Length: 411
Ligand code: HSE
Image (cartoon, rainbow, N blue to C red):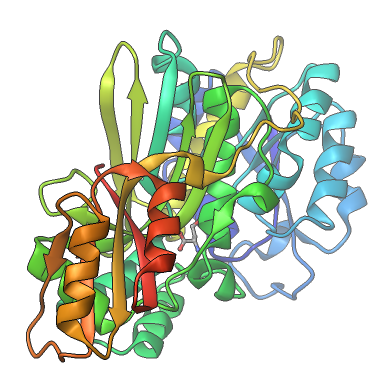
């Protein structure tokens, strides 16, 4: 069977490298007689590259070659990736994609196209890099009703936060290091503003709860507003700040979905997930909590997930794998503030005692936080667990100038 790779960036080159390196065992596991790269599509010139013979700049070479049965899409973005992937599926070729932007935006349509054409559209690498998560949710955890899924879904921001917290590194230096390591997106604002994590939690929510969830309905906050003061308060409280993507299904079948920096206590399972590592916690009615952990970005970890999908496609040529979710539904996603939880608040005040008294009067046993060298003009606290909407209404009326509000989570 012949394979084409579209996009020869960090992931695409890793896929080619891994297919060559472990060729013998990969072919054996694929149940095919052979698995050979026929084309690599990239608009850049790689004629001097060791894989130079495979390169083409013309997508039609791939589309019109009936011997190419599996196409790997690692181009990123939605256009022309969507057009190319659609054409390949319509031409009866299975497609493997690492492209979370594409899957979050067009997953339902592409899964339907794959079904119509009896081919596979698989995207294990689109969430969590090398961590197995799509297949475990759709297969191993299939007996569960999943009520909640949450995780550290972006390696770049977790790497930056870890370097800032553990090594006191400046934000820009940590970002540069993440880029040098091939973790960051071409435009790293997608990482640091939370959009990459939002795409990933949409894919997971669609898979867990059965209807497509689009990124524009996700309340998304990145890590750019996190200050050393917040980090210090979290540390003194016995926790850390992590960028968490989460999706919850309530008893009425509605979804709450958010991405944002959140406080979690050190004993929680996601608290010790550092550097480029990701972790995803799935809460099922039979399994309880299960956590998947591993490298969430990088060349070979991500290629590992892509090549596993290639093997799966090769094993399911005659009959496609039954896999997918339904279309999006109106009013499926509801406001996150309808959920209950605790909030961390950091604020400025001219009168600490008055602020302290007002906070204690307004809330039932709030936790007042402290940090080293805390000025008298600053106060930080954690509300009790309550309906978020009500907590925010109370906070608004307090005689303080709120500078930061973060969710406190228990994963
Ligand atoms: N930029 C992404 C991250 C790459 O840092 O997690 C993996 O999806």
